[in-house]
Amino acid sequence: MSRLKRIIAGSATAAGLVFLLSHWPGARWPQSGFDYVVKPQPLAMRGGDPYVRALMRTISASESNVSRPYSVLYGGEDAGNLSDHPDLCVKIVNGPNVNNCTTAAGRYQMLTTTWYEMAQRYHPDPSQFLFWHSYSFEPEFQDAVVYAWLSDSEAWGTDIPELLRQGRLQEVLKLLSGTWTSLGYGIEDNSMTGSLSAVYQEMLQEELRTAS
Image 1 (cartoon, one colour):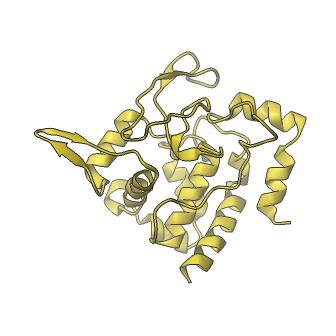
Image 2 (cartoon, one colour):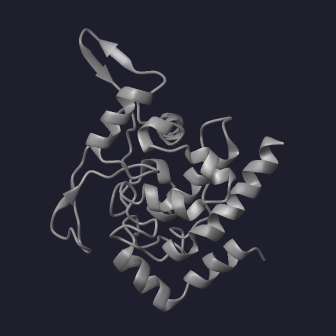
Image 3 (cartoon, one colour):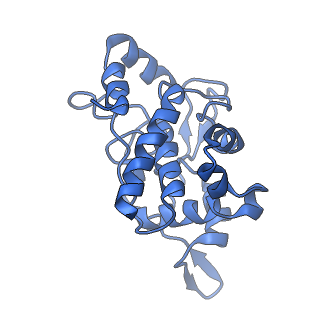
């Protein structure tokens, strides 16, 4: 059994379940079994740097570890239509922002404002009618926008793909924790936070095998 599978199996305990439901932004009561504790799915997008792809899957392991990550809202409901960002403000029930609401949605739990800011920069296929632009939130476009963002050294002030190649994952997670707060250096750790290094290593091996 791989280390990642042991992590997932180990979380399926009574204590783990309580922790998940109280700390995991994407947690929800399962319909059967522990279907919100899942191995990060392959990306919808094709191609790209395997190191960045592995990082994206690691982010989603912490932010949207559910069976349908691309359409999940904060709290676990399914958004349904992904022709645009759902832009639904869901009440936060725990943590430092309790009683506020959040529009976090999709595999990378992007806020509406963040999505539109990044989509304007990186979306590969925006729609336009007169002066109005729209940005599909379909899975491949969520991936494309986040992939381009993570690959943009100007956006982060450093070359994230190169840091990953050098094995400096924790430095990358710390850099990203201001955006994705469950990565170990932010304000909302959850039950997956401490296992992200192991998750990343397993995702990286998969991505390297696929790339080769």
